[in-house]
Amino acid sequence: MKKTGIVLSCMVSFFMSAQTHDLVKHNGEKMAVNLIKQETNLVYFSMPNSTEVEKISKYAVASLTNKSNGEVATISNRINCEDKANFNEVVFLEQSQTIGLKKGESINSFFGVTKGQADYDVKKMKKRRLQEKAASLKSPFVVIVSEKPDETKAVLYQY
Image 1 (cartoon, helix red, strand yellow):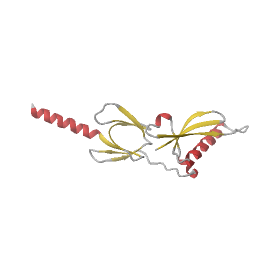
Image 2: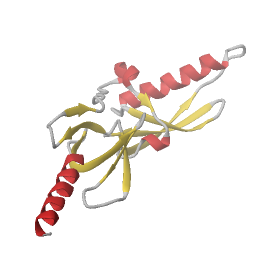
Image 3: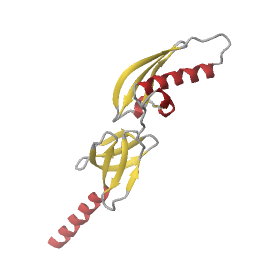
Image 4: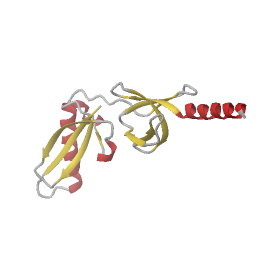
């Protein structure tokens, strides 16, 4: 009976270590986690010795390393916005996709609409203006908070 208990505890401890991953964030923070699943823009995990499911934005995670076999999976690449010229690299996110990112300042974009201008073009120009402001403030992520015909409010997020 004693041998069965030892074998069973070894199997359980092996199973627990097989799930363990090292999660490395873009800000340099490293965490030991049990990976549950990855969705489009979120990574679900639990901390070792815990059953509570937590989630983090895939944009905050650089890589996941499987401790059992050493396999490294890149989750997202770091986005570096140095100046206004890099505005194309700025990513628009939903509020639910910002978990694990640091909230920055709020920005506004005022845009005068000329008569006969298509709504699609106006939205495109507003977004470009927000991207340019975010890039000049060295922020790679933007979340649009409110959008009115002449004004758009957004919040910047960083690593």
